[in-house]
Image: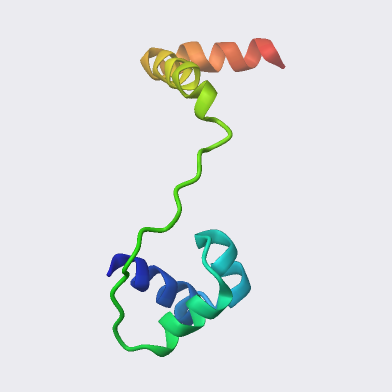
Length: 84
């Protein structure tokens, strides 16, 4: 049900085009239209899961983020000042 609420919010509140919604979700425009016309609708399938282009680098990126998280703000400010 959460899936349908996201589609409805994007279309009705955020005024996002059906084409943009279908591109972001990975469903056809006709399917998006059908969901918007229907009052309630249960999904009979899972949206396709696609691998991210960053998946091969996920561990390295996570390590970098954890390293930066442990540093103090002063150390980060010094690092930025030296880079300029």
